[in-house]
Amino acid sequence: MIRVQRLTKHYKVHKRQPGVLAALRSVFRRRFTTVKAVDDISFEIAAGARVGFLGPNGAGKTTTLKVLAGLLAPTAGEVRVKGFVPNERRYEFLRSIMLVAGQKQQLLWDLPPADTFELNRAIYGIAPAEFRERLREMVELLEVEDVVKKPTRQLSLGERMKCELVAALLHRPTVLFLDEPTIGLDVTMQATVRRFVRTYNERYGATVLLTSHNMDDVAALCERVMIIHHGRLIFDGTLADLVRQTLPEKRVTLRLAKAVPGGDLAVLGRVVEHRDDAAILQVRQSDVSDIVKTALATLPVLDLNVEDAPLEEVLANVFAGAEAKRLPEAAS
Amino acid sequence: MSKRAVPWYDLLVTLFKVGFADAVAYRGEMFVWLLATNMPLIMLVLWSAVAAEAPVGRYGQREFAAYFLSTLVVRLLTGAWVVWTMNLEIKNGQLAMRLIRPVHPFWMFAAENVAAWPLRAVMAVPIGVAAVWMVGGQYFTRDLRQWALFPIAVLSAWLLNFSIMLVIGCLAFFWQSSFGAFEVWFRLYIVFSGYVVPVDLFPRVLQDALRYLPFRYLLAFPVETALGTISFTTALHDLARQWLFISLALAVAVVLWQRGVRRYEAFGG
Image (cartoon, rainbow over the protein chains, first blue to last red):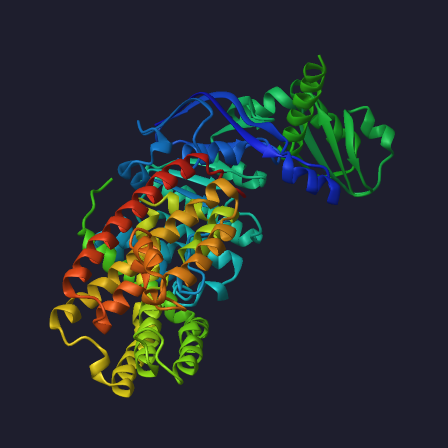
């Protein structure tokens, strides 16, 4: 479905010092630097998969998404989406994909979303009866019956994003690129968007590639994650593998009936957090059952929970590790 | 994935309908813009004052009135603002949302501009009728063939204007902003299109040279067709030249667009 081989995308960026003199100099002599937004990455994604594309700001996620959506031409490498070369932007390719960006909109600002839906019906050549049926289904799923006839500019961010999704999916794209789809949304809206994307993927077998800084999006939607850092792919696998490889230790959360001394906790494992009524320990996976037994026997435990380290922490570790590895390489 | 289930004309009609709804949403601003197209009226006052003593070339006061009121009508009907749309969308990355749709953005831009015609006509048609009524029918052509040619000349003038705006808009791919180029173009247009001075008041050498430049085909040609100051045969020749410039501008726009999109960086998240 999606095949990327040795993709590289460089930008030429005009660079100058601040100040009037530098501005004046730049009129006569421009200095450009090359930014390696994406640097020799390869991957494949099967039809129907939901994949998370993670990385810090400026890592190259959105650039990769834009290359896959045909908005940017690669500097080098080969990209195929459903057999098409994206930046040739063939009609059949454009009919089969969609990019939804949390910070860009296709809804017409001064008109109600219903007008954008109608425009997309005509653009994608959807038969009227089919259009009505698809619209009814999505409007119901996203609960936007009451907002589609209000001018877009008067909608809340969450309502707009829901309508963006309706507009984006009316033509039933089989490849969906989502760039920060829950950015700025409240938790209820985030959950609705996630549920909707998941339903769409399962119902229509669409391939979903998602970038997000919101780890709840990733945990809820993505079976597989790819991590990009400074334009290079540094991890490609399941979420479970990522956690296992990066922070394999488990987190044991204890809710305590009364405060206990730090020393009593330290004998069980590394103390991540310690309050009067609760503590979090980090322990080796193989030691979990023994430590749980000991904790229950020796401490005033009201409740106990064992889970993986939070994804944010896992990712922070991945990025820190990659950065530590990169700096000596860059210096040499 | 299903094939296109509705005909292409459905797309054009819908683009027009949605574009009209958008134009109506901005109706207040649109009318202010149209009112700002008042240069021909200012020129009418100035040239009428000049012609009060004696005619200027073949233009007396009434001839000037017929000329500048016709100029106003043609200008109102041939306006295009795609340069602004393109500059804004290229700069802020919003163009990406047009590029991912399976319709060439030129069609969308065209529909958005054409959709404003009914609103423009609301202002232009009464001015045209008033011009004939006030000035007198004898100052306009009585050749029915030329009246038949007039709307074609106006439509073609719009298409030429729109195509040139596309060319200038595409320059924003390469220069970040092409408003400077537009300003240069617009100043040349004001002088050489017949907007402030009827082209036939220029020296003969310049008049001849202007036949080989696009400016007069944007304004003076449709106006002269309506006034009957050029023969039907000359009008047909001008129409052919007008389409030559349309073809040329469209070809340049397509090439610039293709190259521009290749280097477009779809800025912003």
